[in-house]
Image (cartoon, rainbow, N blue to C red):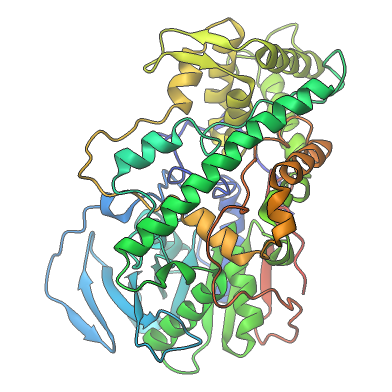
Length: 538
């Protein structure tokens, strides 16, 4: 098991966002990845492990937003390798191409295809080249191509430059087509999402020992259900938009049905067969949701598996067999521990390195101060007149902010600064941080931010008509159960798949019990992970 280092001793990142807008299941534990990567690479190259660079962080400043945000300058001619026409792109050593796969791997009679955006960083050490390693950064909805440009060189160095590092945009994401598109422009998408639960967690009373009064009254529950009725209606509107716009923009009317993890894994198997040859083993590294891809891979294609590393594990049984709105009570088992680690690290760091600390501040007193502040915001939001977009600060917004920062302990000093200001009555820094800028140019196409909903929803079981009729009550119950698991943060997730249209034609739900892999499988789990604490069923 790998322990998180004290974040207060580390520099602040320069980029506040680690995922494209809308992504809830974010890429995990950037600082922890340093040690995890060393273990992963040792597994891949065995006796050829080089010394790691002194500052290795494969997620540094990672932004899995739209691929179009990258500058893909072409610096030379192209070369055809089988069905992929590779072209130099970006910096030296990177190549980009497209790979056509059947839209429906289980029925190719229509001839319809999906076009995968693919990139690779060629191994510098060509004489001792071992093969390819396929990488997925997580999400779902993260751009593998974008990730490769950010993290590829660091990964390659750890592998002694002996592997081609290959990644791709999974189905529906960024430059892979058909895209999961719900709006005609990014402006329209931003304006719709900006005041929804996709951006702002709902208002719920925290249930902790430090807050006086009843844990939850009937009035609290009615308030929650009233909010969930609005969320349900917004989700239905979004589901209809995604269905209609995706079908309108897709060359094939069935494109919306083929974005699930099983389909992504079949794409990976076909891509590896094309690049490395028939029968060659598939080497794979997956982080966060990418671990689900790894779990599906070894169970769907055990005979094709080479060396597989999954880090920050998503439980594949829960992922495939449990409805999305039921996940938080299972996912957040260590979230409170992670939060208390933040408080403890702050107190130990002292006021010179943590703005919430002080000579008389203890772990218990700081915990109580923050709980009481969250409870006060639940009762009375804080006016914030001087933010870039003036407004109010609510308890849901602040809980969402803290929860986001639990993923990124390097940024805990920044979180402490913002919380310190808010406690003094100044919520400007908090509101400026959480209110994303929105696009004003209506000619810019929408990012594929809703791919996370598309993939998550098509991978999970369908609902019965009875389920659909009780959607609000069901989500309210699950949020209550999640607060038993995590009293402060169990309610930060309120979204569900009740109103999502479409299911993939292939939904793999196990078994996840393969044994006897030739190379074994390296499973890396972080201690006190706020979400990815899944046990692996092998």
